[in-house]
View (cartoon, rainbow, N blue to C red):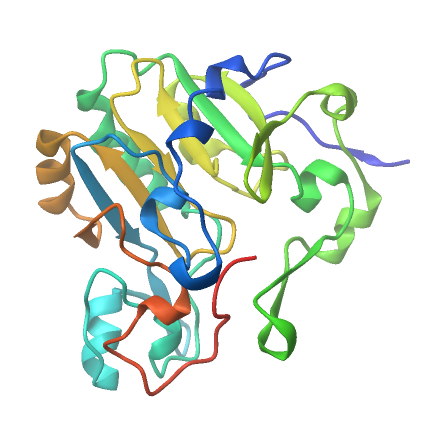
Length: 271
């Protein structure tokens, strides 16, 4: 008998994706010579764009210490800048890819809540290929030819899972290279966006009804993007997360880091 997967508590699966229809027309193209720019992931037209760096862990005996990218850059003789790539650091433990962790999600939610008039009415989109949604282990290949990396998206026990029945019939939000299921719920759903208990996968895109800001965690990125107002940006820059301002044109693929160019193990661009 298969284990049942449930929808995140407080989030309602949408059978109409019209609420996301505005996004595609406000995205820049990606790939090729232009790489993957900030506004290929989040919409154009906002006053400010920020990059939230996912922490990396340092394991020392029985202790795990959260490290900022700036700490690791200093250790490895690299420089922090808007297009910095974690793969340029000499660091064995990578940052989490494709999702915020619970602390980061909770902190970001608390900082964004005052900057929308509709915190209880948000749209939350999650990539349709995650194993907890398909009920199977999913391997996603990124990069080009022999430089590709394979990320196992879910543990092997995914093979024994049964996704919600209504998920199979749900339409998806279709954007370049990606498909997403769409949910609706309050902003507080984000730090507990679990289809299986204990397996947090924050939405890959989420925004409030009033579109005051827009958050995106690309499935192959180890940082999260926030598009917002200037006042919201100032608050995030002064907050507890490691945040850096970027532009709509900042490249976030490995070739975009032209400052730290001597050490690389990652893919060139997203497909």
